[in-house]
Length: 263
Image (cartoon, rainbow, N blue to C red; front, side, top):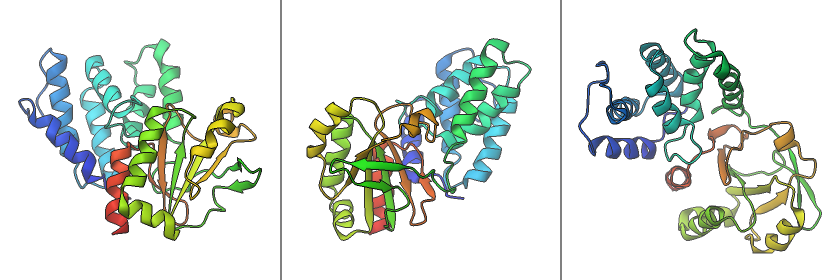
């Protein structure tokens, strides 16, 4: 399976270096800061580790801190908070699986953890992304799998979303990425999945004409939970066969991966 992206590990290393590092095998002291430093150091140790092996390490981490609710909060904030630059559902999955089954999990939280586990299991790295139909501003019906390219960047966005505009600008500013879009080796599938179609139609003319922009005419992405879209924008990078390379990835991680892959 794909190795953890090195830009993510670099960010983690920089964060870890901002405070005193502790050995992964030592129990944390009472402070939340010490748990955070400990977990950041652990994530840094996963640099270059394939996801299947990293998952085993995450299960070991859960076993070690199963009773530690403060550590659970740290892990969840880093790996599953949609605003976290380190979010990674592939790594969080074995941890939340443990939470859903643990005898130490309060009954009031067990159902919520089981739901999060199901959501993290959608569109996993190195599996085929869920296909769907979308409709363009001109009324054309397209499917995700009908878009042919070496790479496909799937973007769930909203009109007038500042972060979405930042992603649009970043893609345009990167000569390698913008060149790949123009020559067809990279396709951008930009999909609106919410209900205000009038607002989307007014704004859609602002999307680059080289993108495949549209909306979900059947409402299946949210209602059928084809994708775990917890925040907008949400980015998925797919290979030529539509297997997931990056899942709900931060823009900087997508930029880093594509710049190196397309060079």
